[in-house]
Length: 300
Image (tube, rainbow, N blue to C red; front, side, top):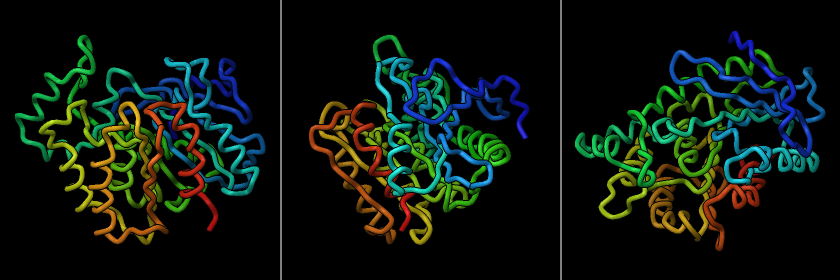
């Protein structure tokens, strides 16, 4: 069990529609830089009843728009309350893993596909790629394998030991958007015995902000061709909009969809949706979050 001593059982600054957030400040790690972990529990949380667990990236963006950098949120508490109230999904708690802004690209870029790129190209990304004129895209070498160990070997054991969870694959899911979509699909491929489903919203297939002569999407497709988990026991959800950054994604997503078909996925365990007019933002993801959650966690 993790010795997490700095815990706010209720987080006063968060405005929630329901439920309670337990915050683990700077949840420690042997593998990666510590960061805050928010655990959302429904109002009727009962320690005698096991819950599904949904792990989500960019945890600081999930619950309260008054505390986020852009004034937007996923509305996770509202969506979960509605779906559980309508009995579309079973009892569920959410683990929001905060991102560290400077390290987000290094944490979320799938490491094995990255290592499939030529060495000189990898070096140019880490040393030269920029988010904007002042900000490097990568603050350090890609470290997503360490980030996933943080989740699987440190966070998940703590959650399962301290909360009423179903610890098995069939009740454990992972979700994120943009780069968070990439790390979610990487997580289920690398840990198919841990995660039963992944929701990848507005998945950032280019990996960087360059589209011309970009070898990265093909490496993602090559990796998935070899590493997709058994479709008999896993579900994938993908989507994309048509505005702002999402306008780039359709041709790459279609390439990935072909990989899914070749590996035996069908409508029962895989969904890709296009949302016309939707942009690349928490407001857009909030409007459709109920769809992947119902698809992954819904009672069949």
